[in-house]
Length: 339
Image 1 (tube, helix red, strand yellow):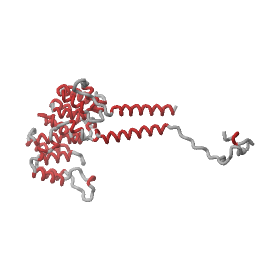
Image 2 (spheres, helix red, strand yellow; image 1 turned 90 degrees about the horizontal axis):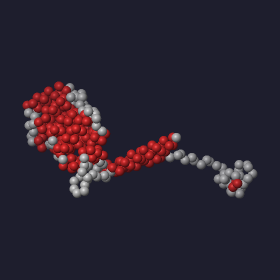
Image 3 (cartoon, helix red, strand yellow; image 1 turned 180 degrees about the vertical axis):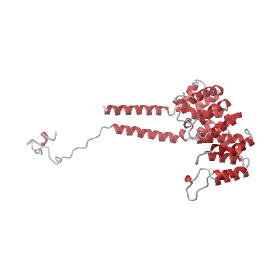
Image 4 (tube, rainbow, N blue to C red; image 1 turned 30 degrees about the vertical axis):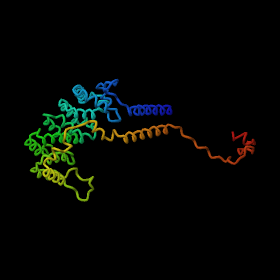
């Protein structure tokens, strides 16, 4: 029975791996004579499962932006209600970037709810701090003030708060948020939130204050930001120190237009261009995953292979076929133990 169970386990894993391999290199046509028209479900499936940048699905979404945004908002509401499929959850990251490229402001609040939901940060991965701020900037329009709620909520994931901080900073730099309001908000922020030691929010706050060149808040930074520890390697130093704050502020004051031109504070651009830089869609990533899958198959096959018993040691090695058998039977070796 154990042998049969092992074989069944191998078959299941091989089945899963073959389905995964079968997805590699698949493309979905969109547009052009004889091509397949993609439904929203097709687009979401491709967003979730494609091993290469899902260009066809992205083009299909951009070709019908209003309809795509309507369906995307409904999907995000299902995610918020914990009523979404695994495929829809996997598609969220690419979907958010396509929404940022479309720039339909109706998608801002549903997306902000997902970003600020402490249980829903994983689908965004590293993009939460790298590109989601630009996506939020593209969508927020007149709703920039809505970012302040998650920024003040210390129960929200610290990197989700950072994404909101970056988008809010862009709004303040460009005048979408009143400068006096931004100053008052930042002046009170650390006292209102009482961030725990080591929280990424200190870096978020320092970046905003220096980008807006609020030099009069330097004393506040001195009281709250850590100092660099002499002798410690860089990876053991605090994220943003008071010395870092001073350097960033000096740079911002010397280059007052730098914040407005900062690429990390700009609204989001091209989804295909951005995703093409991601390691998860690279040829190297696919090769390494294929190698890992191959090792997994070989390990499973090896684990279910019956053990080969070593031949017992024998004293008969030099006995001739026609010699008397060493066992004492009186028969020739070839008629006895040689058989």
